Image (cartoon, rainbow, N blue to C red; front, top):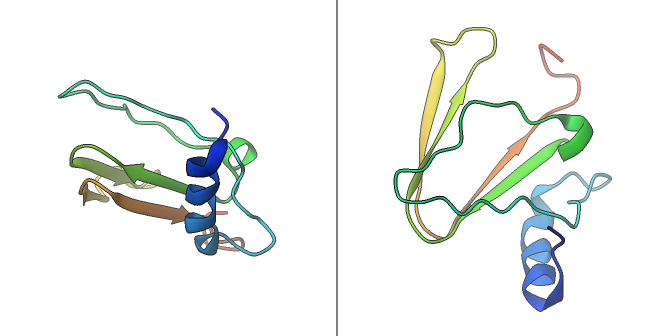
Amino acid sequence: RGLRGSAGRALLLRVTPAFPPRRPPRPSAHVLDLLPGGRVGPHGDSVKFCGCTIAGVSLLSPSVLRLRSLRDPQDWLELLLEPGSLYVLRWVWGSPGE
């Protein structure tokens, strides 16, 4: 979905500083509206389609983001996303496991 209108432009302006200068955010978004108890299963986001930075906003209710290592599935982290929170995941070029 394209981020159009004043709300979309305002959101892009707000998250742009979290992106590398030469890789600004793309003006599109995936919008997920989950039922209570709904979930997004394990998946990988491709740099080819998402770029080097992924940002997400938790809007209406708290949710849990679980990040798991591809190398060691026993190595994981859970983050509580309160309503109105923004998270930013950035892949650093030249990082181990590139």
